[in-house]
Amino acid sequence: MRNLWIFINRYNAFFFFIIFFTIGIYLTVSNNVYQRSVAVNSTNEVVGNAYTNLNIIKKYINLGDVNDSLSVENAKLKTTLLALQQLDSAKGGTIKDTVNKTQYTYIAARVIKNSVTLRNNIITINRGQADGIEKDMPVISPDKGVVGYVRDVSEHLATIQSLLHKDTKISVNVKKNNALGSLVWGARNSDFKKAYIKDVPNHFKIALKDTVVTSGFSAFPPGIPVGRISNTGISTGDNFMTIEIDLFNDFSTLQYVYVIKDKLAQEQKALESKIPNE
Amino acid sequence: MNSKIVLVNILRWFILLFIQIILLRNLSLYSLSTPFVYILFLLLLPFGIPNLLLYLIAFATGLTLDAFYDTLGVHTAACVTLAFVRISFIAVTVNRDNFDEPEPTLGNMGLKWFSFYAVLCIIAHHLVLFFLETFRLTEFGYTIVRCLLSAAFSFFLILLIEFLFYNRKAR
Image: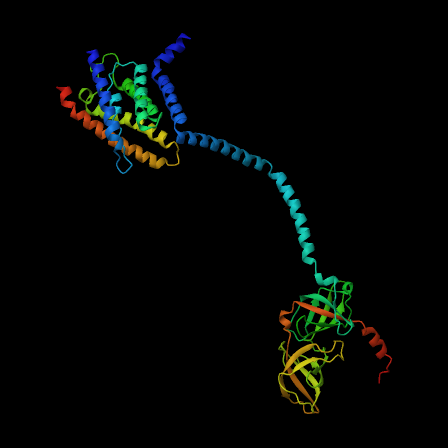
């Protein structure tokens, strides 16, 4: 106790300093509005900062749980997203052709493979037997123009023999005067924007820019616009002429097509097969 | 002798505080440098003064200044700090047993010692003063600049006053 007293006495300057300085600070903080506000605020700040840091640590510790819950949520969302992406509003519904009293039903399909540069081009679509696609069904593009025929069908996919194929023939006529011919492609050049109408009788007067539509004699419904006449002067030397047309649809940018289901196709086929081949 | 020292110090206290409050209070160079000359009184207190008495005097002086500056506690704390620095410095540099001189004046102690003594005390005082006044560290650089410029100004004025009375004391 005595030693303590001696110690305090020896360094009395320091202890006096502590005492008086504390009183000075106390007076400062308790009597000056500004200093008090700062002192209180910085105390709050310190406390707040401490809590913030504590929260950061807590967050870090909980990171594993958070990760798990996030990945679970992620999986859920991904599943939903996939379901939404594959949801095709056109799949279930069909577009009714009321003019033809629902003889024709349209099935929308997305083109998943396409080519325009080959001699014989085949298109693959994402509809198959499950969606009611059958062989030889006609296919048109959504805005204007014909695409081709269904060639092979699997459960969920189908291939289309494009108009840009050497075996494809579609019966068409010139809208103005019903001059009948058959639409082919690739006989003279491989421009996917041009096609030819063969076997048009010579006596028809064909004007440039006339619209060509399907005749309805092949599997296509009648009146579907196909193209516009761009050249009439191709002579073949017999009683028929060949007309060059510009196709309405652009095969290179084909995204969606409609497969046309003809309710009467089977009936027609059955009926016509009774006629003996000569 | 003793009563004379007391009288001189009381007189000095009144004069210096008068100068500080009436004159220097309104003086500020570019609002950066504000001199505080009243601390010369604390610097010139006799060597033999007891620590407690020194602290009480410093406390009272600071309190008086605060009353006029409307900054209760700021000058008090600064003056107490100055007292601590003064005691420490004198304890280190001056032989305590035989004080040749009664007061640490420029004439008694020489320019070198007095300059060192004054600069240390002034800077300690001003640091506490300005940082308590600002009361935050965000303007640290600005506060430091103000503090050091003010300290330089104060030191200049204190030295000026000391030189004015130098001849008379040296005789």
